[in-house]
Image (cartoon, rainbow over all chains, first blue to last red; front, side, top):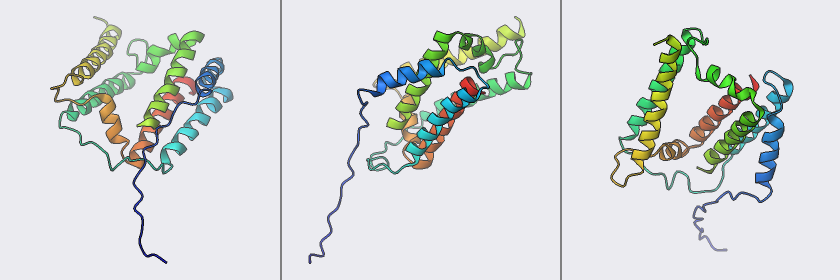
Length: 136
Length: 66
């Protein structure tokens, strides 16, 4: 019996978009957009995808994440500053009551998201964003 | 300028700055990484990936379910 061990190199897995996935995602968004907020159906539609996304992210996929990670330049701090500034501005509007006079982002989007087509497009965009994050 | 206009102007300004940063990051000599590079860096570890997905989930919950 050989005592040699074989080193298994990490294999990069490209999560290809299954041909049926795009139409399914469009259909899912089209149906989910018919659900009003604060309903069991809307919570189920978002909750299901959330659980699926988090479980997928937590699973140990044999790709080369980590080994091939790029170092970020100090310029990334600019993004951190931008993110904090956005969060502070949102917090300011929220603490002022999140009213029409001091609207948060969600208050600003409440109106447009009442329109079915806008809601469906935003829902699809949200799903696409999750997919892109999982691919990173 | 009303408080509403001022608040909205702040969000618009931040959005414009974000777009400008992203465009700047695409230049060859840019000292700033793209937003996607930052996300990729965060997603390097499992906790980072899970954290990103939780933020994504919260956003969906906030806008479509809450």
